[in-house]
Image (cartoon, rainbow, N blue to C red; front, side, top):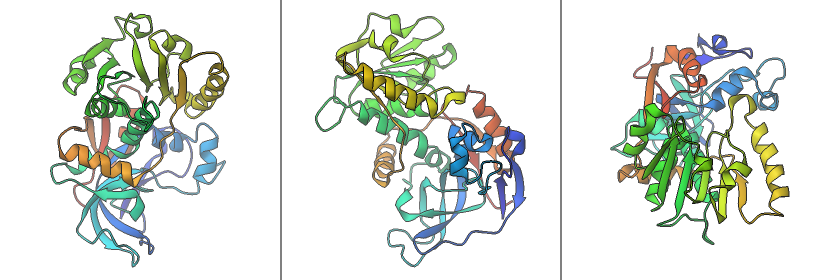
Length: 332
């Protein structure tokens, strides 16, 4: 089968198409005929091997031992391991796996959910990492004892036009929140169209100097400090860090978490960080939201399997509106 792989760390040019052996599912796995996959910052950090802790996960400090790329997947089950009970061949599924940028990939049953009939494979593939980050981030910012944002809570989403942000706007609205999205001029109408009650154009206004006050600030960009964001937070407001600049990925959350612990001793507002984790329950929940039309994934660009290099390069540039997906219509 054809797959996009990398055998050394570096820029998108290290990604190459190769003929590799078709994977065989283990007892607790299914074999998926990939119909679509999504590109995430997660992928380019593994590709570049930056920051260095990523290389430990990739299995090699000088070069990756695992050459596969891609984590978000949607497709049809071709074969199932003998311990699989929830899926059967022919089922349309979406979720997380290793090596999604390929014609076929294996995934654990616990990392998959059934794809809603009214959702395309491309839409379904765009969900996992971005939606996990948005959903789990909003739950971390929950103001009630059960960790839920409720009707009337005021939520600001910095980076509302990105992959995480477009999901966050819609998820927060499904919880009944009053949502303000922060984005650039060219994305104002799009962010408004997916449900934001107010939209702040950051090229015209600094949201941290606004007179508005928010219960939750979900920061998908990381271009403002907690101290700056505190100016627009209610006395018991919560700041949730869900992203950072590409060169400081993983490092920024750790640094901010340490600062937050110290600062929390002196201020009433709270700062938390979110590092999304795969969750079958959250994946199923997102499927339900899409099935009833409360969430519709925003897809910016589509690339073919042979264009993974170009897709990663485009996402890495930092101007994507919503998600960038890889479409695998048929075996190459």
